[in-house]
Image (tube, rainbow, N blue to C red; front, side):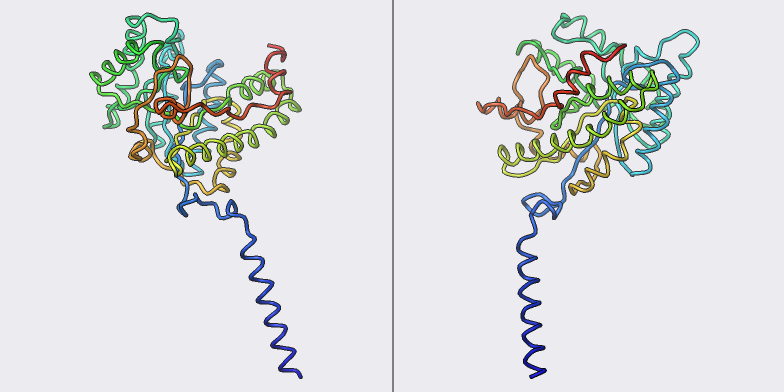
Length: 322
C-alpha cells in the first residue's frame, strides 16, 4: 500500500509540474520568437546635455556615465558642438565630451546647432553639419579613433527626395555612416517636466514622472519588437534613441533593469548595423520616424500608431511652469 501511494504521489507531482511548464508565458523566457536573446544599441543625442547650464551638464554627464559604466553598456553619444561655446566655459564643456571617450565610449555628429532640416536650405544644413564635427573629430583623433557616425536632427532625413539624396551624398563624401533609430520615443516630454521640477525642487512631480517613464518605455519597446516581427518576421538588432538629460541621468539604471528583464543584451552601434535589415531602402519622409516605419513605407505598407505618453503627462508638458 505504501508503494502504491508513493507512486501515485509521484505521478500527481509530475502531472502538476507538466501543467506549470506548459503554461509559462513565452514572454517570461526573455527571448525573441526565434529563441535568441534580444540585442540593442543605446544611443544618446544632444551632448553634452539637452539643456541647462554647466552645472546641469556636468551633473548629467557624471551620473549618466556612472550608470553606463556600472551596467557595461557600450553606448554612443551624438554631439551638438554649439553647446560648447560659452565664454569662460569652453574647456569645461569640452571636457564633458572627453569624459565619454575616457569611459571607453564613442561620439558622433548631431550637427552644430541641432538645426531643423525642414526649415533650412541645403547649403545651410551642410554648413551646420560640417561645423558640428570640428571638436568631436579632434577629440576622437586624440584617442586614436575617427569620427564615423552621423545622427539626423529630429530623425528627419530631408523634406524632399532631392534633399535627402544630396544629404546622403554629402555624408558619404565626408565618410559618415548614418546612425538610424528603430526605437523612437518621447523621452524628451518626460525629461522636460522632470528638469523643470528638479529646478524648482518639486520632488513629488519628479517622482511621479520617473514612476511613469519606465512603464511608458517598456510599452514602446514592446511595440517596436512586435512591429519588427510583423515586418521582418523576426526582431531586428534594435537601435534606441535616448537624450542626455537629467531624467536619464537619474533613472538609466531603472531603464536598464527593465530592458534586461525583457532579455536584452547591449551591443555597440557598429554591431547593431551588421543586421541586414539596415540595408533596406528607407523612405523619404518629412517627419522624424523610426527606420522600421521608413522601411515599411518604402514597401508600400502603412505606419502603425506608436504608444503615447499618458494624458496627464502630455497636459503637464504644456502647463508646467518654466
